[in-house]
Length: 299
Length: 247
Ligand SMILES: Nc1ncnc2c1ncn2[C@@H]1O[C@H](COP(=O)(O)OP(=O)(O)OP(=O)(O)O)[C@@H](O)[C@H]1O
Ligand SMILES: [Mg+2]
Image (cartoon, rainbow over all chains, first blue to last red; front, side, top):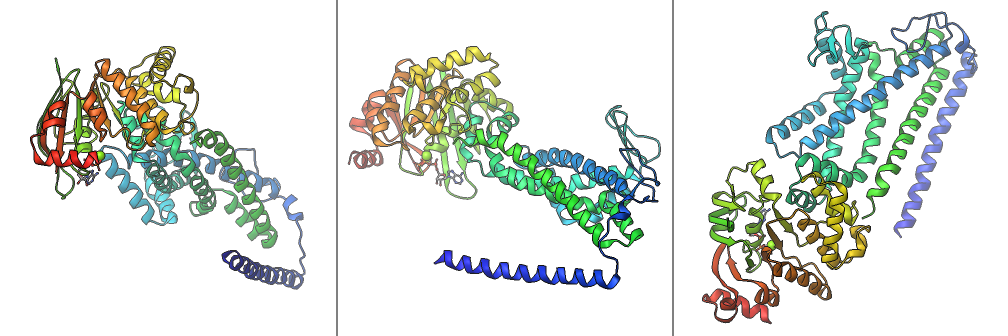
């Protein structure tokens, strides 16, 4: 009986979706006819005409718009990849700290998660950009020796210079997503039976080692799916980089659309680029899943 | 040093409820086998869990294998104790993602810094001693309950403990699997291991225990040598319990 009801629900939902798509396609067609533009991607090969504040590949305003979009896509990819790494480190650290024996560590991690989740990400990005980074002195500060130095020009790691916009987006996305990942990790740790903690403690194994060798491997099957959805969130949230003037894919597409008036084509390209990005993240997580979860699932 | 456990009026209350341990005094010598009995909720588990720091005491004094354990749980002292005191749980608590061999060698390699080859050789020896020499490369879920519990005993023994704590080691087993675990424990006792065993197995207690501690409502009701306990228990409460158990 339940099966049958579900089947009906599916049919109704499919009907709704099809109607919506139909309306959209109709709108699109009507608009295209009215503006007498038709779909065209020729503009992609014309000179972009605008400068990019940062680029990993050589770029000049005289290069094609397509090249500008590709360069900005790489900018997005770069900040997303770096943020994923940093957010994971922060999140695993804070999530583990919330189950630490040290009450101070527990409270600090709790404060971090609680605070960050209260504040909209856009506000946090603006804070990191205008208050934290632009508020720094122009003379580089080196809190941890010569490895990392901070100034209002951005972060320098081992001689690698990150722009202040990149730095603000990186830190903002990482701190924000790190808090969400901390919750995911804490939930995963809590899914491991108490007896496992007692067993490793009884053997004289310390908290850090026990977490790494006993608890985390068993928590991973619960953590990984939620983790990949946090990574996808991070990728989507990276479009907020436009607020601090970072030349990411969304910001540059926005400029190109304004200049050419090609909104539909521009959004199609944006859509496909993000689809590619998400497939990349999903694929990566599936590989990780296969490597990590299969052997651990022999329970 | 012949005292393995010394407890002086230790007390423990779980948030707000009645006392789980109420002024318990106890001293256990090296080489002794003590069986702890008592009705459900009488504090047996809590008692032996304070002996390796899994539960902190609220008041009183504890000294385990010569190391004092205060009410303010000093993590370093606790770890020193845990390295020398083994514990076996009712639910085995093997690490499901590790092979039997890795379950046994994890702590010796990581905590005692014994090299891998030596740790594995010792693990194979312990498995043979437990009668499950051929299971080393399997995973816990591939073993029967009785086999898993014997692995858990081997895992604890791999740290060369001076004292072994058992919390109802056969209560989660099918009846036909109980004997193989009790036999392994019997051999351990015969080898002179100091053991504190929470169990309802009267036969094992009668045969192996030097003394029996009978608890009720967090208090020591009776602490006497096992032959006395089973033939002429002093306290009415103990005799009633034995009567119930016998039926
Ligand atoms: N983690 C805990 N939180 C709150 N109360 C607890 C906790 N552990 C034990 N208690 C309480 O402490 C008392 C003693 O429990 P304990 O587990 O030591 O009894 P036990 O003799 O081992 O019983 P059983 O034979 O059922 O295992 C009980 O009243 C129990 O409810
Ligand atoms: Mg118990």
